[in-house]
Image (tube, helix red, strand yellow):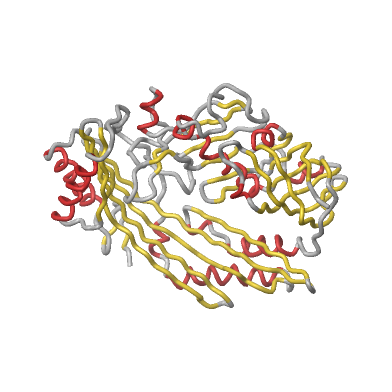
Length: 462
């Protein structure tokens, strides 16, 4: 069991923060002494819990821990990387040797390098002691309550496919040979429910999820009701004829389309010619109602941290402002290529990999319109609640052809459920056709979006 103290140090089954910093610094010093011109160590620890209940009882429960150190060395413009889970003196020395040996196999690159020392990082509230302190039994009860809430919502909810709770506690330490030293502890927790509603021969699925930094912010009863509503409202769904109408995207669906573009905002994709936004800085790529932001410093954001996977301070980067492309996302390497500074987007999944360019809290900013008002303004349209086949979309060209289901809109009113139809097009064209943005920004993990209304979309039916 983890113990938490007010000085932000864990005690028990995890190395204390100061000791982690000492280990990280000592490995860097050893690498430099053995001929590395620059070196960086990244030490991380994570403890994860996953609980799934079915029928009010625990179906599966998994606890996992992962701890280790990744080392990058720079010799003659070449980079070598190695990682180890053996944090003994001998294990760390072997990691240094492997990293140096690996560097000899890599071509020299003048853009390789490390960020400079940072004197001070912004203080962020990313650690919830409740997640470590609350008994597992209470977390099980939370998943059970979510399942019960769904069943109580409507008797047609017959099957619970998954009612789960998960959380993670992690600690990260980074040190490099420029004197940079940073440490951070963070937590998150979440609930997820997937179910099936049945009415006669018809069955429809529904799901809902919520991931938060704070345990107290989870609302299992609300998530249970939401999942049940999504399934029940689709009972009796039928295809409609092909038509060109306004389409309203639910936040989850809008966030899915946003995710399709995420890699195209990275400088790495742009530099490799694999971005649909290459050479479009200053160009209109969306409706003037659209603002897209990446913000690793967002209060309450599940991907927030004081620094990225290289120790660069995180920041808010406006990518699209009033429809105009303003910026790309950078880590240290890609920033050197373009002669700019890193945006703090050196994302690192664990100590087992090097920092790549990626998004943090990535979202479309909300507008001023309520979702209800967006629907009321539509004479003929489709309220899209689910997309099938998003993985088949082309993230480089932005082209997509996906199946959709949802609710028909007639004279500003939602009338009947629809399935077995499809939409196709290009993500830039889609965003350029947005004529309404909701005030209901919702995050799904690290991606978020409000309700979007889009005009002139062809819905292919029968």
